Image (cartoon, rainbow, N blue to C red; front, side, top):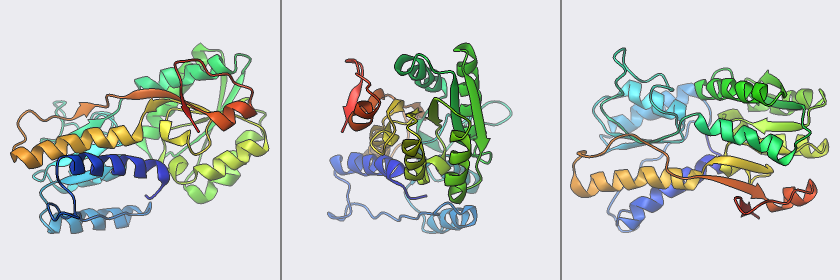
Amino acid sequence: MEDATLAQARTGFYQALNEAGYNEDSGTIKIIYRNAQGDPTVLLQSVDYIISQHPTFIASNTTLATISTVQRTNEIPIFMMVAPRPDLAGLTSKEGKAPINLYGVYETLDYIDTSATLIKKLFPQSKKVGCIYSAAESQSLDALERLKISCSKMNIELIATPVNNSSETQLITQSVLAKNIDVFFALPDNVIFSSFETVVKACNDKNIPIITSEAGLVSRGALASFGADMYQWGYQSGKQAAQYLKSNSLNGLNAELVRLRTKVINKEAARKFSIVADSTFVVSL
């Protein structure tokens, strides 16, 4: 789907190609871009159309896009971004092998643990944390399980409520906020990504801070995060794709872990909640 957070990854991917000399302005590449706008049927149609155009490679942005593309072709190289490790996405064989044509950059759930510690670091008196999640997204469910474990270790009660689509976000978020939570945690979830401004407004109205695992959400109103920089995530995947274009070879390329995770804090939100960030945080205006 189209939203500001996912767009950062796409921009990073294009920038890596551009730095290697590949861009549409110079005529060195042609980009066929499709966006399913959150519709699974349109997503499959989009993948089928792109495959029919016999592209040199396909770049997939988000878990569902990656899964759908892998299911449709095992020949065209796929460079993923904003997606979990292949086994976490259910893309490995019974023998534990990843698809032979899958490259690019993945994330694991290890960073969720560190993200959750920000709750106690910034709000040590917190006793109750709320979140919403999409039951249809594997990465959201997996992240929720990690968050449950982290909250249990910190003796924090977690109130988690499912949401089906972005049209429900406002109502479901308000129902979570009505349960007197101390902090709202924004999970890596496409429903969250597409309707985050709705979450921010609801939390701000109740004076509830938002902690997240997604750095891209801080510039959109979350207080603080620890997680992959979306732009750099796409850029790292784009560097792989550029290497493939230059060499016309996939030798030496493999799906790899995202390299850059950062702690980010929103300057305006920090002021609102009287938080003084230490030197380990990157400040987002």
